[in-house]
Length: 309
Length: 309
Image (cartoon, rainbow over the protein chains, first blue to last red):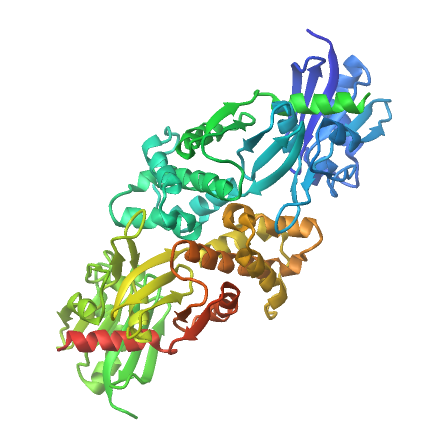
């Protein structure tokens, strides 16, 4: 087995995930605790919680450096790390880290999130996605999309993250399909493959030149009218709405200036949503370039290496 | 007491509301049954349910004509009445009614809903709002807005309802403020007056010339970033989001061609939302003309009178 050189923590509100990694970023071991999230840590006993999760790694390999991301760096976490403002790259993110020495002598480095002070109407924020963007690579000027519950569109410029914007796409999809008139009408087939034709119909409308597609609050009502009109089957509503909402994200991102037809954008991470985003992009005349699977880990190691200089 | 001349039913999925009215539309008596909705009526026993609700009116005043609207005219109701297509006015709606004679000799007239076959991506529908529009008055060409869970924007042209579009504004507001990241962050003050300043800040962004305001999926995330940035207090999120979402409805309706700056639009009904919509309109350079309080009843009587000719 390659020599372990560091421990990476993705320490969120509800869970703690730890990776034992080699110098080249190979993951040698993992620990995952579904009740290890910061909401379960009482009286600030974060060090004890950490030792419980990965203490045996320290015992086996000595006081390895620990690199921590996630809500552990927020106000409710162990060490609050201020956001680094855009534009910022590896150097700025490294300068924004905070360090703490554990009782066993290991140094834990807390990585900062990012803030775009120019975003409208209020500064936008991300915590974690910036490591994925760094891991994707900052060498070329381009726009990246990071699909998710709160998707990010980000612009890389001159080797730094220049600006970004959050789209609550995944969350709105979940709200509509779990709690709205759409939830009542749909008839999902559990475990079935997506119906790409229905998905495509949603995207096609979102990408069309119909002015009605600019009216998102109206477009979603088509999940009902399509069924009433016999053009949409209840078992296909979910995929139709998925296509419509992700397509609307692209339409809105275009309106907000994140891309123009004919460009190439990067898509970051290995989120299961990526295949859906990849299918939407061509309808907006975009070419998509996928990033590495382990973008977050690569980014964390790059920032930590710079911080250790 | 003026002589009762008809009974108007608003018979929905969950409740039945009945009004005893005079020739001039005065409401002389009402009955409301919260468990009288069509979902509670077993084996198609609609006539028995109706007699239970308003039988005493028949006993007292004879077999008055009954005018029925709501889901009672849908596939799951008593008599399914096909939608009348736009463009359509009083004559077309009257021609689309269906009649049934009750055992006591009273005639019940079921009023149709409306369908806009030109709507994109699928024909749009409404059931009930068309009576409010007729009651508002079809004499002048103009755009009307009907605030609600599923708001309608409608165009009156040449004495008929020319087209309309549904916006799921109220529903999206409820979803976001009850189930999303916004629900977790807000700190409502029960029973308090709306904070019009916070409401106004949401509207102002939606009405601004910022391209970011075209990105609805992103704009709603400002409910979080505003709090993170200390510019929005948890107790003001609800009113801010209300302004942002209703403002977005206007922005999207403008993009979809429902109005231009400088115009006058009508606002229909006496929905509690109307005061909010009335505050949004000026930021889009619109003048709002309110309709009569009893628009739905007026519309029903006009259509029924035409159908009785």
